[in-house]
Image (cartoon, rainbow, N blue to C red; front, side):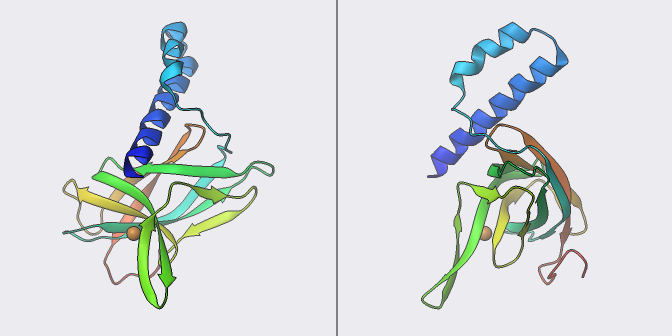
Length: 170
Ligand SMILES: [Cu+2]
């Protein structure tokens, strides 16, 4: 499962590299030759607005990040298939769940934001898990990038708050 996610993220990075090369107009043909390495991309809205990103920061161990994700495309769902941050060595999409009275969390491969809808990543639901911070401290703003199924990426700055925080505004 984890290896597959890593592959998807690598594929997405390559796709976005190709897109960048095309829009910058240099060596377009050389870069597009690498297309055959890319895993088939699934269509996704790229009109994603990220707001109110915040996290519960732990110096030791994983930190969690939450954000409002709005898909302003009225027809097309958006699919988030990966996450990464320059401030952390590892990042994962997670969901919290409850089974037989026990609470847990698990990795998810994909999070859908339906057309025209807002999805809240929040405590007890979908969230981002960040591992092995690169000298982050409470009160810092860190970049978090969401990778969509079509290779497009959306980045926002997330305010790292204390473990006792319950929302962006508290
Ligand atoms: Cu988690």
